[in-house]
Amino acid sequence: MSDIVQRVGENIRILRKAKGLSQEQLALRSDINASYMGQIERGDKNPTIDVLGKVAAALNTPLEELVNLRDLSPVDDKAKDDGEATRYAEKIAIQLQGLNVREQEAVYKLVKQFVQFKELQ
Image (cartoon, rainbow, N blue to C red; front, side, top):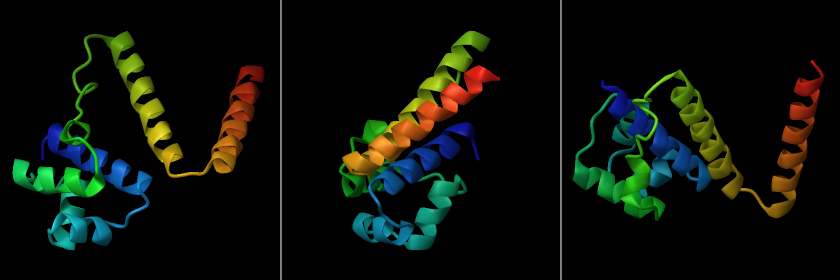
């Protein structure tokens, strides 16, 4: 499938995990087959806009978040690097949303130590 289909599936997976849902739970809430949900997340199937609307509603997320394609076509290498960095920062932020404050603090300390260690190299 296309890069767009892959990216949409990845976005759905990230958002689903951030909400603490299994594929089966999201499929049930979206009123679609669990197997089909897995195919969407893997980028094997190209969902209709109606299906994406159901998934977005089930995730209580704007449809725009599912089809966020900002960094698929960067202008140059620097833009690509900046886009990828932003994308990973967004992924990390989404993952942190599923944690309580104490857990978020522990992750922050771990990341801070990693960055400090990297700077010593």
